[in-house]
Amino acid sequence: YSLFMVSYPLGTAGQILQALVGMGAHWKFASPLWYRLSTIVLLLYVPGTPRQIVSMWGNRKRSFKKRNVVKQEEEEVEEQLPQGVLWPRTKIGDRSSTLTGKRIFAAAAGAGPEGARAAEKVMKEKQWRFAYNRHMVDHVSQSLQSTDVCLAMARAGLACAQDSFRFARWGHAEMSMREAMETFRSNAFETAELQGDQPLPGKREVTLSYGAEALGQPYYKFGEQRDRKISGLELRQQ
Image 1 (cartoon, rainbow, N blue to C red):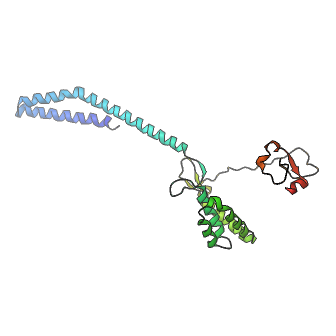
Image 2: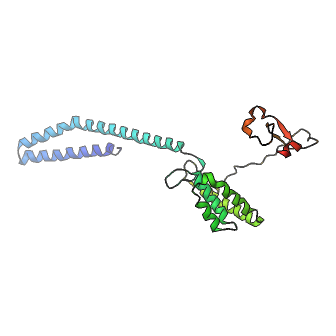
Image 3: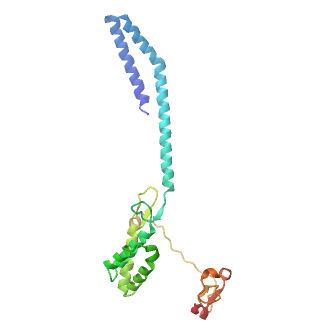
């Protein structure tokens, strides 16, 4: 829609030149009728050429307007896309926390004493939302067998999490967390030291907010006494 500003005048000039050459031939060798018809054709270029150029100019403006609208819509869609750390997508396109959690637990369990059997047991669990607690107990039980086992399971789970979780940032393709940590390197972290100016208490004691009057009462039943503090023997009894 921009080349016409050059091609149209060149094409019109070429056509007029051909018409003039043909008019001379008609006048000398054919008949004056074809000469007069050629003259009429040339006269049509006077109103037709500007109209054609104006029409193409209008098409050009509409085309660029649509292009700018599409580009703006793409930018708006990109701004609305989630950024930062994301749950991975499933086969149907949604982002599932359940499947991701199972995979991370399975990876950790696979590095434990029971190996692949424990990982398979986790992945075959169909009621993960309601039955994950027993897998959690098994996980802790295996981790307590030795320091090396605990570290191996933790590292396997963390490695799976780094490969599973996704990271998105404007202008970049979505990638795994492991790739993001290698791609976006900058001095983004700082170290600060906080110094207090008040003296330390003479006696340090752990204190918790617990408003229940009797042992074992659930937290949601003592909303009016939630500012009550317990410590010492009372805290131990809880």
